[in-house]
Amino acid sequence: MIRRLAVAALLGSSVFAFSTAPAHAVPICKADYACTMTFYSNGSHTTVIGQIYVDCYGQRSQWGSISGYEVVTQSECSEPPAFATR
Picture 1 (cartoon, rainbow, N blue to C red):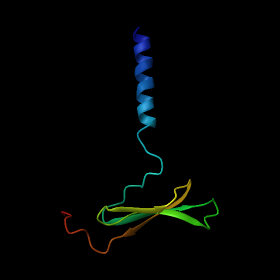
Picture 2: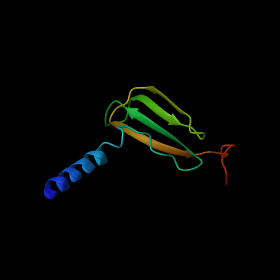
Picture 3: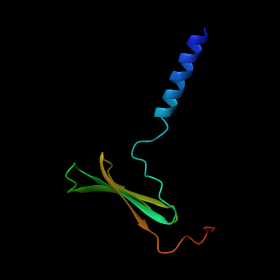
């Protein structure tokens, strides 16, 4: 009985560990940075088919399609957001 409970607990925790991250989530930007995830039609990265952008204030915008071929860039914000505390 204890062995069954231990196996059930192990399986339950592994399902939770594998299901917590959504596919194609925008990575969390460093403080005072904006992030852009650009999606391409194939591995040669010649044709852009979509983008997700998170600005310095955390506002997200996107257009186009999402694919498995992406490049993530981060750029430093020139001024920190007005509501940021230091």
